[in-house]
Amino acid sequence: MKFTAFTITAVFILLFSTGKTSAQSKSEIQKLSAEETFPKDDYLDKVIRKKAMIVTAHDDDDDASMAGTIAMLNEQGWEIKQICFTSGDVKRDEALIKAGKFILDEIEFINVEPDKRRIKIDNATEPYMPIPKKDILVSFNTELIFPLIIKKINEFEPTVIFSLDNEMGGYGHPEHILVSQMLVDSFAAGKIHPERIYQSVYSNSMEKKILEERLTALLKKWGYPSSYMTAREMYDLSGMPEPDVEINIENYSKQKMDFLRSFEERERKTIAFFIPYFQDFKHKEYFSILNKEFFRVIK
Image (cartoon, rainbow, N blue to C red; front, top):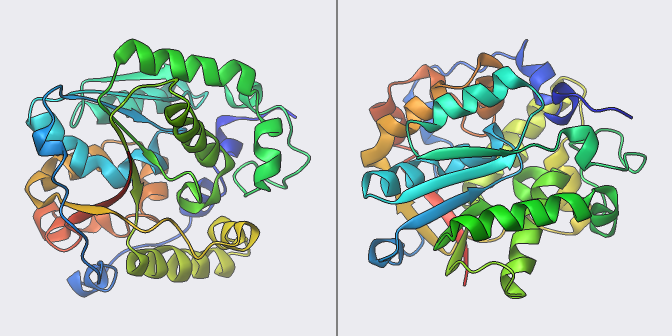
């Protein structure tokens, strides 16, 4: 089966061309904000060798949730590079490079297109839907893609790596889990040498309101299954891992909003399901409410 950039991007692209997501007031955002608090991160401010790498599977749904923190580090003089798989769509890849200029230094694509990196699809109805974890490794061309990712990491030598979590992969996408688990395993085995891995996650209350309730209801309304709820059931999880730290990104609201809005319309509509209504408000209004980003830290 040959994949296209459309199929691997998930069903969200299809839905967002018709789905309306306009907010009526700031109360809509307030309903989605975190109810919990976590320890403030005290590590990143103390780092002497300021090099960070974002390692994600995709361009839009991966790094959007950590863009405020990346913008903060960028302003503090960190050297920041992102690597991710090519989408297979030149225009879309160019849009990420354009967006990245607001928050980081360099973006490099791993030029293995979707149909080359996934070698087995008969265990899933759609490429974005969760599959049993025992099937993830055998479903992907790990002998090709793992060495490429590890090589790029070791060439850059980051002090900190940013990624999604390796348990849910945010919302259950097998490629998210594949990449994040590879990072954790390679770190534990000494194949890569960052001091820490920061995994972007939601607080429990945000996850419940944005993914469990809002996103699932919209997908159900349009007749599609929820990859997030399927992953929870399949992996016997209550959701993403609990955050270890929070980072206030309110002072970097403009950079984050500029980053998010620089994507093509199709990707902006995808992002809006994970960062709802961001296109309907000015950056200060929006990120004065959703003003924190949350991370699990692997040491």
